[in-house]
Amino acid sequence: MLALPETGQEWPALREALIAAKARDYSWKRGRMAVFFYYLDEALERVQQEAYLQFWTENNLGQRAFPSLARLEAEVIEMGLSLLHAPEGAGGSFTSGGSESIFLAMLAAREKGGRARPNIVLPDTAHLTFDRAAWYLGMEVRRVPADAERLSDVAAMEAACDAQTVALIGSAPNYPFGTVDRIAALGELAQRRGLWLHVDACVGGFLNPFLEELGVALPLWDFRAPGVTSISADIHKHGMAPKGASLLLLRDAALKQHHRFESRAWARGAYVAHTAQGTRPGGAVAAAWAVMRHLGRAGYRDCARRIMAARAAIAAGVSAIPELECLPGEHAILVYRSTDAALSIARVAAALDARGWLVSRQVEPDGIHLHLNPLHAEVAEEYLADLRAAVAEARAGAGAEMAAARAY
Image 1: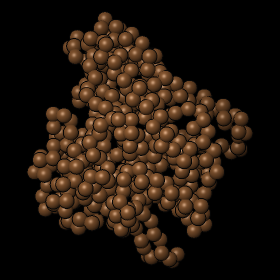
Image 2: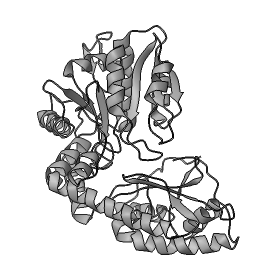
Image 3: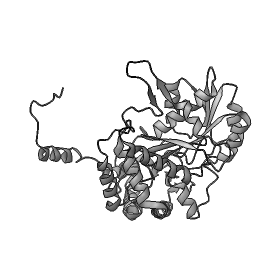
Image 4: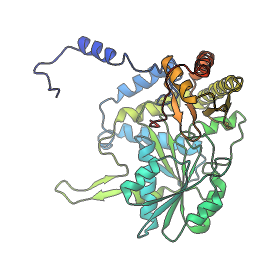
């Protein structure tokens, strides 16, 4: 067991130790990963770091002590609401990530629904964070198979509802395939049955609006769709902010009461919180604010343009390999698979891994999953060259196979 050292070490030695610790990590700055990171360039990286350092130790729990953070957080939420076409009177909360945003949405749906044995109904393409939230909150999860287009089967979801249902879920897009669910139809169903409808736009919240501006035709997915109650959108994904930044946005700010905790059951007086956190890093708020102001709509459009260029280049390169095919889609998520039983995609994955690419495996269908960001436009040809070599190696039956293990 490692013990705390008796005497402290100087920073230069610690810095070298930290650099050495990363020696076997995959290189995100070289675009060798298509999961876990979002990167534009060194200029934006400096904005992220310097903004974070301005508030590196301030605690966003103490907004009475730090009114600056209260203002910055409110402005981030307002910009998010505006981006997603929220109506007047809408509100939201700044959270640590998509998992917390989803947790708070499900908590609010449960509390507002007031059912004895609450359940939520969602397509089987929805993120497993909903199952985790339901596990914490004591709710039943009813996963309904998506249809042949890998979209929400609204009729089947309605059939899965009963008197104990409190919420419906749709994704914009879902993470396994990058397809946008039939949010408008789910909104009609939610209104008809008086249910909470949450849209998981953790991936798409800060990308979809700019894809639309570039002419990508997406189904109605945000607050423009009647019946949408809440949306989760991660600023630390395609919002390009440092980790620890997401939004839970609500059509009506009054709905925040359903995920509000308040108690006076101790000697210190009232304790009130709208998030699952206690201490909240002020740096995450400041950095998100600075990145959003720095990029503006034009900067985000450029990020979207680069992502679509990366997708087009990689999809064309994959499709040019006879034994491979890309699944349909028009988003940052690209999945491809082998169409030849003699070509093991698991061998292709292992060969790519051996060339320094972190490979994210897809289980159904057996394939390779890419979540693209702007940097991948710069490395697309390098990736394709290694993919062609990996396919040739796998075709020859050489090398190991990579099991489709954990998604993360």
